[in-house]
Image 1 (cartoon, rainbow, N blue to C red):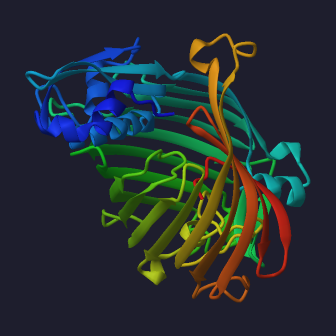
Image 2 (image 1 turned 180 degrees about the horizontal axis):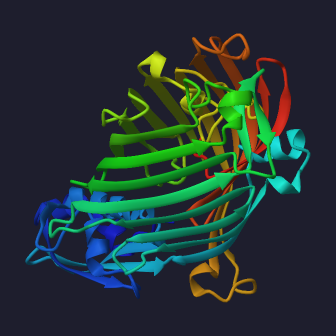
Length: 467
């Protein structure tokens, strides 16, 4: 929750009289309190003003709440308050104090998660099978060295055996604009979804041999020239292997051309411009994201195609309690003759789905998606969790509950396998009502009652979904 000092309200309210004295103020000093681990420069990087700046009074009045939002969007802090604590009206100089409550940064969490695309698929279609559960340990360490860097490691067993390490260091230069990221992943499975029939994944399991192995390495360079814009350039190496059973008996087009190996390199450019008020769960603002991906950059790569993806959203706040969000996405893949089932994915995976169709996958070459949600905040309070946790950063839990309603439209172009999957090459429409719960300003839980154009109803659970 954003808090303003009484003094700030005072000088905005009496702006007319102040203009008679001076229309500008000089930021003489910035004091930071509460950052036990986070370095000062990380906090100052998110401000829209700096020490020594000469600003119009109106501009400073707008810069303070915007800077509070920027700091909350880092997810390094549970609370942020920026106040003017000293104002020399004779010299038009101000001293600004920033108080932060640091979030809990270390998340060593046991892994107990479902291997299926969502909870409903596991509960209904897979009959709550325990052998489709992943177990292990995941460590997420935000602000690892106090420089807003992040280390993530995964040691996972069960349905998918996976080992992964990811590291992000956001600023490596003096201008605080360049960062680096790296990722290594190895995973293996004894069960594999080898094709789609009637828009449902078809699985094969073999307890005597590994059906699927994959290795991935990524290296990225991030360029963040200002608060809102981020450019990322990545190079990737992918190596995937399946048992000979897959191309010989199950699906020769799984990797294409009867292959049991698929190896390729990737060059990727990603751009994001984000002016949301709170990125994890926006109420106001907009964002644009685009991705251009070249799969196959060496002559010996098994894949040679382009993927173009463009998405954007806009949120409108009608009151402190009511807001509307709308989101659009389009993706196009080139070189139809280079496509294989493994990469032939569209709707039904990750967050790319039409609500009401959670039980289905709709694979294809290209797709479009439009999502809308109207939200009413019905609960907003900081809950005292001191009895339940020994960690200071988690003792006060900001919690907000929203009543929601929305509708989605989606379309998938499938020139290859549409005879087996009837939901392709037609418009899909879903309507929904539900509840969203956001806690600690970085976790969102969603439960929805949805209906699709087949007149099927279902109650669905989701996690950390904006719309």
